[in-house]
Image 1: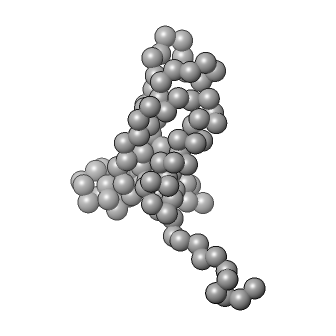
Image 2 (image 1 turned 180 degrees about the horizontal axis):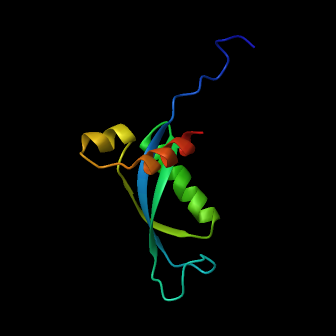
Length: 97
């Protein structure tokens, strides 16, 4: 296959997302809970792709995503003044691997 026909992979970045989920039968949330907030580190060529993939995975896991808030990449968060612990950076790296 020639180089012009090969697909070139776009570089992925890791995005920090907070996903609010509601209740759904079989969701695994504790009794009495009305929902949950999940912090997710998702990779994608852009934040929109990271959100779509995260929502799709949560739906496959019988969760009921209601809202997603994106906080951007590691660089975006640093520029906003967020304090980011080393263990959080490790989790972001795992999302890329």
